[in-house]
Length: 161
Image (spheres, rainbow, N blue to C red):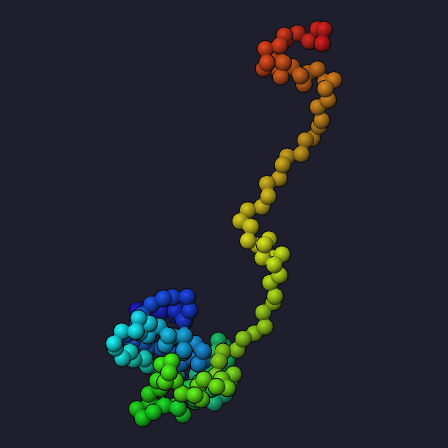
């Protein structure tokens, strides 16, 4: 399977292996969460590929900010021999679990969505407009009564009305 970063969330798939580009720690944890979701008796493996420019000391990724380079440095320093980092729930190194603000993607401030706006935006169609009459029909207008009188079988002559 080849996928974009949208696979990080919202997809319930179970993978045996993963090859991914370097990213901030929060994104990597989401991606690695797709490995062996079913808890099968296998040892899933993942590999992280990085471009030199992305992990340089002054790198500032447009999506992950400096979290990408900082995460790479943290992974390199916590890796066991063979450049292996266990991302299992019980095995993940404590330095990757605590004080991780510099390892995650930047979260820009978002505007608050007020309930009134959510209600308005959730409507699927506008309320239909009822036509406004251009002229009023008065009961003294005998020509306006003619079609109704014909409809109900009344005499067609307006004499005596």
